[in-house]
Length: 583
Image (cartoon, rainbow, N blue to C red; front, side):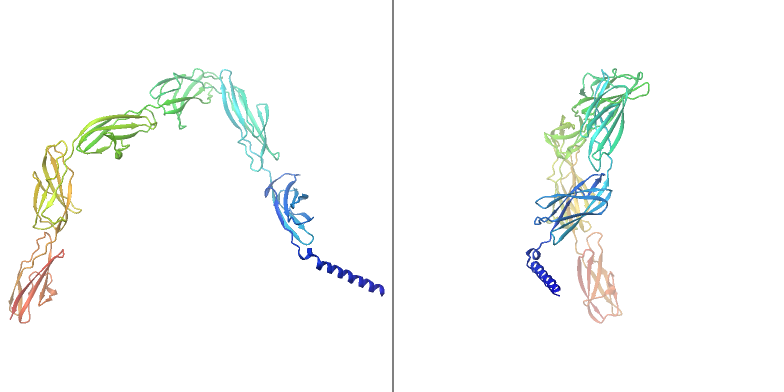
C-alpha cells in the first residue's frame, strides 16, 4: 500500500511538473508556424533521361533552427534525395525519375510544434531527337584547275526540346567532327558526284542523320562580256561562251539570261552557237547576265552569273500643241525613254511657272488667258534624269461677256408688260481682236432649256416681259471679229406675279333673279389661271364658286350687293362689288 501511494504521488508530481513547464514555456505560447516556398525545378516539364538526378530548391522560414525535413514521392516512381541547406533557409535536393510522366514530391518542414507541407509537381517527357539540315553554299570555282569550294553549315538543324551539341560530317569518305556552331570549307574536284552526310547529336545523345548529293558531272557554263561590264541601253555588247566545258561531249545549246535589279529572271536568247551579239535593253541598275549550257548527253549546267551595270539614259522630251482661244491643247506627247521599266513624269511650265493642275499629265488641255507664252515640258525618269523642251505660243484671248439688267429693281425683279433693258457695253472683245460682231441673248427657266431671245449687233436689248411667273436666267454670248465666242454669262431675272383684275356686270330679272351678264376679269401673267368667288350681301355663295357667269333666283326683294373675288394660282387677288335691285 505504501508503494502504491509513493508511485501515485510521484506520478502526480511529474504530471504537475510537466504541466507547469508547458504552461510557462514561451515557445509553446508564441510559436510561429514555419513557412515553405518551393522554387522547384528549372522547368515544370523536363526531358526524361534514365539514371539522371534533377536538382530542385525549396526555402523555409529563416527563423527556424535545425528544422526537420521530410521528402517523399507520392506520384510517379523515383528517388528523392535531400542534399544540404544554407544559413538563409534555402534547401537543395535532387530527384531521379524512374519513368516518364507526371511526378509529385511531398515536402514537409517542421519546427517540432507545427508542420508546413507543399507538393512539387514536375512532368518528365521523352526526349525528341534533333533534325539534321545541311546548308551547302558554293564559294568559288577554279575553272583552270577544275576545283570548286563549298562552305558547309549545320546551323539550320533544329531540336525542339534540347540543345544540339555536335555535328559529324562525312564528305564522300572524309570524316569531319565539328561543334554545332562551327562552319567549314571543303574543296572538291569537278566532274564527279559527292555524297554529303551530316549527323547531329543533342545533349541527351539523341541523333539524326541527313544526306545530300553534290553533283558536278554536269557541264560548266563560262563566258566573257565585251567591251565592258557596264553600258547604256542601245549599246552593243558581245557575250562569248567559248570557254564553257563538258565532260560528256560537245555543248549543244546556250541559254542567255538576265536577272533584273528587282530579281526577275528573263531569257535574253537561246542559241546553238557560243557567241551572242546583244543590243542592251535592260532595266537601269545592277543586273546580272547568266548562262546555262546543255551538252550532247542531255546534262544541264548550273547557271553562271556575271554582274552587269546598266547606266541610266536621260529621257527625250517632245510634244505638239494646238492653239485655241484661251486654250493650249497638247495633241501629241512623243516624249520617251529607251530604258525599259522606267517611269516618266511630266511637268508643264508657262513662262517658268509650274502649272500645278497639269503636273504629270501626258496630254493636258491648258486653260489660260490669251497672251504670248513660253510653254515648257520637263520630262523626268525614275532615276531623276530630266530633259526639257519648250515652244513659243501666241494664244488668242476669248471675248468676255458682261451685262447689266436695267429698269428692274435692285433684286433683278420685274412684272409682265414691264420693259427690261439689257446693257452689254462692258463686254470686251478679247486679246488680238478688233471688236465685237454679235450679241446673242438667251433666256431659260430654272432647270429648263434655254431659248434665244435675240441675235443682234447692238450692245443694248430692250425686252417687254411676257413670261410665266418665276425665276429665269438671262444669258449672253458675244462673238468677236475673229469668230471667237465668249463663255455664256448668266444673270438671274425674276418675273413677279401680277394681281388679276376683277370686272363684271349684273342685272335683275323675273322670278327675283340676278344674272351676271358679263365677266371681263383677267390676269396678264401668261398661262396663269384665275378662280371666281361670289358673295351676296357679304356671304359667299359656295355653289357658284368657279362659275364665270352665275345666275341667282328667288332672291329676297330689295337692294342686294354682289361681290366678285378673283384669285390667280400664284396667290394674287382682286375684288369688285356691284349693286342690283330685286323686285
